Length: 228
Image (cartoon, rainbow, N blue to C red; front, side, top):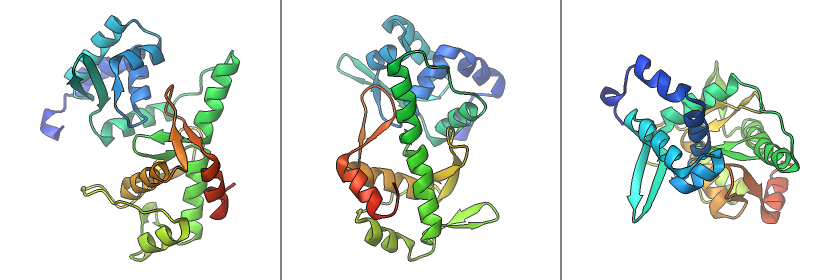
């Protein structure tokens, strides 16, 4: 969505101010396309109610909806929406947990999760620390950059074949982590790393939320680069 099509603040505020719609945006923060039925189950709403909320979010330009047969698939419209939702999450505390299931989900989200298209949680911040230690990323007064030889050095150290997206996004930028309260890697590097870790079986997406499961192979690979 281009800037000219974006609604003014007084219109978009009421849309995201509705708790149910904000929960839907939170679920879509994982960066994957989700069917309306799956979203309804995740947020605990009736399918018809969820569809009405999706229509409002779509009209405001916050999500895109694709019809595939009888299924309606939703995703965030662009990275700016993800950044806005993540910023709102940083202003909040975590909801209390009252069941073993919710406790496990919180623990999984804290350990590793997708933040739109890059890795977040303890593991994301730990890899960020590694990137600075190894010199793959530099910080100049809050502006993050990558040396010219960083992509090759990173691939050699991790064994990942990184595919760099063709876009106008910065090569690397900080994204403040909601649970760790420290920045993790975003930008082209963040996307390339998460895509590579998923493709090489280090991480696996979960069906019920945006937490990421670290596989046995992933534990070995993370340990090999110094992350435990």
